[in-house]
Image 1 (spheres, one colour):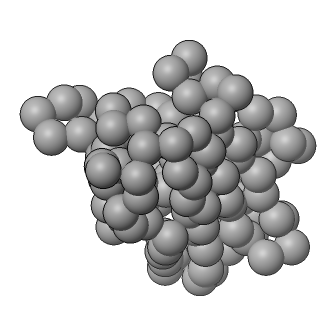
Image 2 (spheres, rainbow, N blue to C red):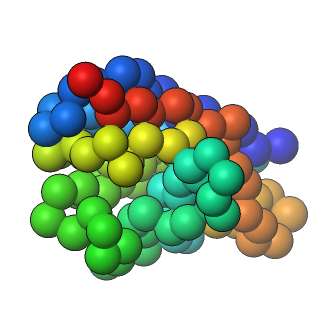
Length: 120
């Protein structure tokens, strides 16, 4: 079994910063890509940022230059540093990890989500 747990959401004023953290635990053999998605009310879930096992990153155009994704392979964690936050960044943020388990199969695992609200 694999668990994915996010933390770090909250309420912040426009222009402020937040850092989201995601920890993956359980019967892990290795973790491939790790990603952050978000879903705003009435909208579809969208990819915010991703990072490969080798550290290659990819960002949505809307967050380039403001958000930074990083990972600690030794701790099985992924971080999302969010700066210069805008009201349109308000959403539930989800962590996704593609995990190869002891069964030698790789699957996507999701966290429960953490709310980020940007408002004055």
